[in-house]
Image (tube, rainbow, N blue to C red; front, side, top):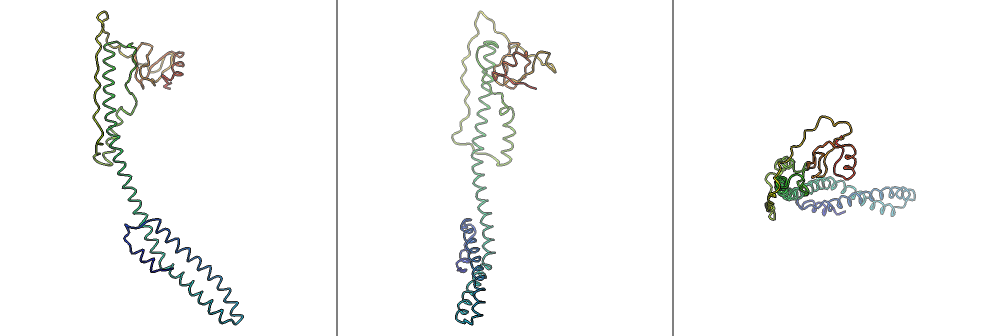
Length: 258
């Protein structure tokens, strides 16, 4: 073991340390020390035999080998604490470098996600406006599906998410490729002169519990029509006859609210 080479390696700046290189150096020190201890154990038996035989020449060789093994163990004991300390510092530095890299990627992805959520919210508002225009023009039974997204993602969720992200990362950069959402051009179809336009029917207020033979359901697909003929959005509650509830649930249009 060349302890001078080990200390020369340890004199390098901590920033240049490679965790795997320091781990390999520590493993080498421990392996050579273990081999030296095994050598000493074998030399002890040989020395006892040489003393009994008055074999001074063999004793000289054994003592020289014993001295070499003892020096290896002594050098390992001297170098190991500094190598262990340097390895701990290298692991901390590597973890901090990894954390900085992950945070940089988080900021970039969070910026893209924030822009995408804002664009989705704007697009969903356009969809709501278009659905209202269709109802006002064609009535509740237009034959067209409702395209508004009624999930929780766009019902106040982004506001809380934006506050959390700004608290963690501060101002997020806007991705270069992000464009503001463009409102779709809506061509309004005039109402037929033979048919006066009807105002949307008010949605009935649900009782605390459904009447006998009826089940309370939650709408899964926007556009599902209530027994009163109203088009409902996903997430709304509606009372329907039990036979219809079972069929609609099998189609995936609604699910049991309780």
